[in-house]
Amino acid sequence: MPKIAVLGSGTGSNFQALLGEFGDEIALVVSDQPDAGILGKAEAAGISTVVEEGGHDLSARILKHLEGIDLICLAGFMRLVKDPLLSAFPNLILNIHPSLLPKYPGKAAWEQALADEAEMTGCTVHYVDAGVDTGEVIMQEEVAILSDDTSETLHARIQLAEHRIYPEAVRLVLGKIRGGA
Ligand code: GRF
Image (cartoon, rainbow, N blue to C red; front, side):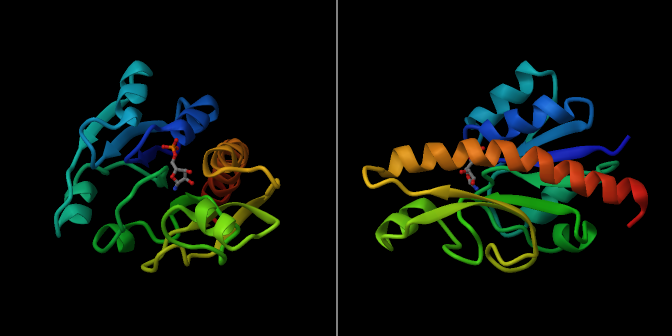
């Protein structure tokens, strides 16, 4: 059975959504924030956790914990993934981003969409490469922006879409891994 590591810095709602479907596969949660909600959620589920705080060698330190891991899912991980971690998992690191990439990469993408007076935004699951939110898109879901949306209401609706497409995208990628594609 493929083993998944989830990396997150925040509340871990996407982790929770993945756990619903991949409880047997998720073997490890890594956070750079010792008080991140994702750690408590992992511990409650009986999943091993590791904290590695920032620093220039963060990717190397994280990599040391990933023996036996086949797929990495970033779920609100607020650090750039760099070598040697990146090259150790070619096309095997996924991220969820709260916009329809390539629109609105970077931080608080839903606020960028609101500031842009866009009518539509959404979320994207993509492969992670060396850029910021530039990797190949795997799956997207559109979310309409309502005239009375605030930053909070829009982000909450995008997150509901995230929780739908992230497990679906992971299922797709695991199928490719199992099929040797
Ligand atoms: C999500 O909105 C995701 O798109 C972004 O960070 C947030 C993480 O939320 N990358 P959570 O920790 O999964 O609740």
